Image (cartoon, rainbow, N blue to C red; front, side, top):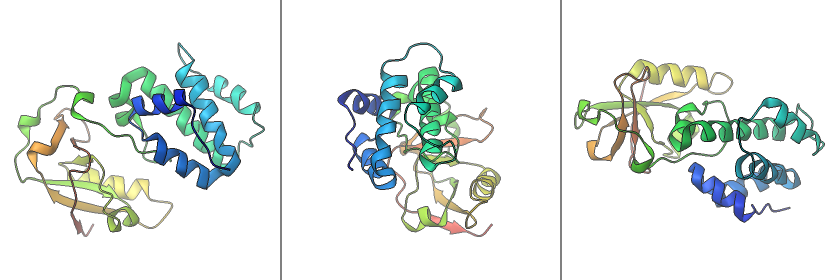
Length: 207
């Protein structure tokens, strides 16, 4: 069964920085008929709900769909519920920054207009930036937007995020400063957020 998001859910996902069409295709291939649970979740807690969202609200909703709390779709649905909570609390930037690496939700994309003012002037053209990622992502050149000026942060991310699968790796590239859209020296991860699809190549470094 192919999932088709409602217009309301599709619009809400777009506001969150998520491509609704690639996401619905992924859900359909992974979860078949259960994928409709996600559309219901977005409508109930994203489009229609106001005020704070509690885990009890999620559990009550799930019970209506006869979903086991040990199933993959349950775990994915809870990740999306948390996406919505973060988005409601901090907008697209809050979602991007608060999303946990172990969550298996869709990619959130940021643009210049989505980020607060930051100290991009602290960055130097051509300086090395690093990203912890999986081997599969590296081989497919899926470099993403989140990088760091601190190699130890990238190493830690590679080790901790992929500890239940093949060891993660660290990618290194040289900063194209005009493509950087956010950087804060007070950020504990010294993150550099790059414009979408601006990093197209990187070197793998031994860790």
